[in-house]
Image 1 (spheres, rainbow over the protein chains, first blue to last red):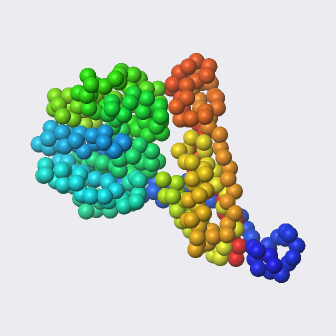
Image 2: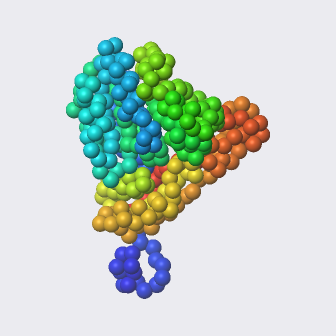
Image 3: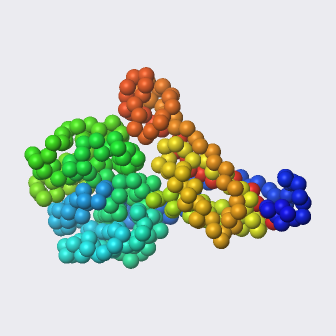
Length: 236
Length: 114
């Protein structure tokens, strides 16, 4: 019996008259990409500056967010979407600063997708001209592939991860618009060259805008915070 | 790990197309996966095996088209094969390179049967 159609033809190969080929020619992630564009259109219409923060676990995304919020919360309305596999620990840290926050727990998921951000935005209802930070799941591989509708992608890296990290995980550095090198205060204790790390970032992505900060030292955040305040999302 | 999300997206996309054509089965799915798309083809194939269960794709043959990476140097306009996302121009050494081929991740066609 033919395994394909169950007919009684015993020959090895025969044509099935009802078969037809449909040209699809569509991006596999088009559903996510469409939802991301929907998010992006919403942000643009309300002049919301949305940034997607990505990094390995432990690079200091949440601490950088806390320090940034402390500097900017009196100047601009700020909202945060937190992505983690489990726990509400990060959203509790943000909420302690009186910032509206929505926690997404991805369970077994390794990255955020546009649909989850859409859901979070409906809950947060961010106001016009606000700053919206999305802290992605700590992972240096998967989040690079999924557009969330952000204006810019920011990759955070710390010198403890090694100066060759951008060369070992090039995709995320290639997709990012901005790179924040965090924990620069640790360099006296490490055998790592910040300059080499800086150069490796630019080898993977010569257009990358770089900031060097220590989230624990407020004065080092001035350039980053000034840039956040002056950037016009609708001219991205 | 993201290959599972991609596999599920392939199933959703192909099933939607099949339903639009009132097809009962999908016999074949043609995929185009670029070498610089950030997808591990072996992991994706493995994820697809699980994702197609109890769907219109359950018995579909997957036809793979692997697309090689190609870069264009923004400094000297040299076009050259790219094996990874991080690759300098072999002619002038510049890292200012635009990827012109290899980021594809597409469902090219499906073959359906009533």
